[in-house]
Image (tube, rainbow, N blue to C red):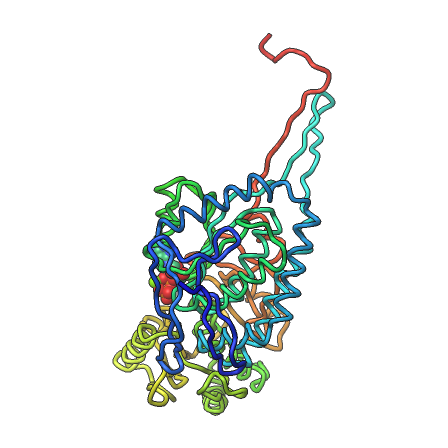
Length: 499
Ligand code: ADP
Ligand code: MG
């Protein structure tokens, strides 16, 4: 079977797309020789088929990773580890145009957004590449009879399971800290968006990583993903995706070998606009935070709370601004909103729109399909949304904004924090005291003040409550891939205390 196909990405042209499973440094077809189709969400047409990993392939990849970890990677000088990562970041920059084009083709995100995200992808890997030779233990002074030091050791073989909303960026957030700390990895991309991860696999070879250090498989959650979560020879699983699946992964980890678990899950983030905010700026950031990436963003600011003094004015300005968002062909350079990822997501979102209408929220704009083909939904705003309505409480993962009025700080904090989620939040105000006061009280892993979605390799990101366990990015993420060993040496001999 040919393991490369020629594809034609709308904003790039013809290129060679690997379709195999990337195991032990090469592309292979998988034990059962199965394949599955990859769909272009903008046209609903099949782009190609890629090889599908089964449980057996997971076993093979884990064995390859374990071998690479024990025989090569553990012994690789940290400075060399870092050098390979920096090379990988450079190669991603070199191929950024192609990677962005394929990301847009497979995921449906507009090419301008995909192009912007590519910069974050290489920056993240470069940032962590710099850490590879800067991970230290400590010496611990106890008393003169002992010499004690700690080592920060890699966990071993890590599984990483990522979603379809930011295929490359989620890959980068996972590659960075795991390789900088010296782990070997098996990553599964989402079954909706396997293409760009396979292009990165080619770059992993080119960057010189030893075979087996980083393995990338395409496959489904219920088969390959579940096999990873319950594998007896995987030391840790890092997952990004829905809260429901996160729960299943944690259960599987508990029921198998108690592998370590980090989870980056859903959200329903409050986006708070106070009376004193600069209204143009607030509208601009609320629009961006709400509708970026077709609202398929875990941190999307979907609960929009507006203080009563500017409520009507804000709604009018917000509507006007959102109607200017260009919805359509992701290959068009000016598109801001492309299609949702799949028919399934499209149907779920339309179900939420129906719920908003039937529960009595006021539909301001949108609420229907855009165009004839592709999974496009018009940007939708509901106002006067009640605190207990489904569209205010549940993560929709689609372009449906829920706006509600609030009275004062106490009122908005009560509503904001009354959620099972706690991923992100935002405050729009000119009052610095208020910004700090409210930030201190919000139950969320991120607070953006007068901006939204500022994600950066240096800034830790993750959830309070059911939005996750652990943090990605920043120095914090390194801890999720390290374990401490304390070495205690007795100096000068002597007998134990009970002699
Ligand atoms: P969606 O259903 O919208 O794709 P998920 O959170 O279920 O969102 O999927 C995110 C990732 O988790 C994907 O890579 C998917 O294959 C994987 N996944 C789904 N179900 C499971 C599972 N039970 N065990 C492990 N991984 C899973
Ligand atoms: Mg799922």
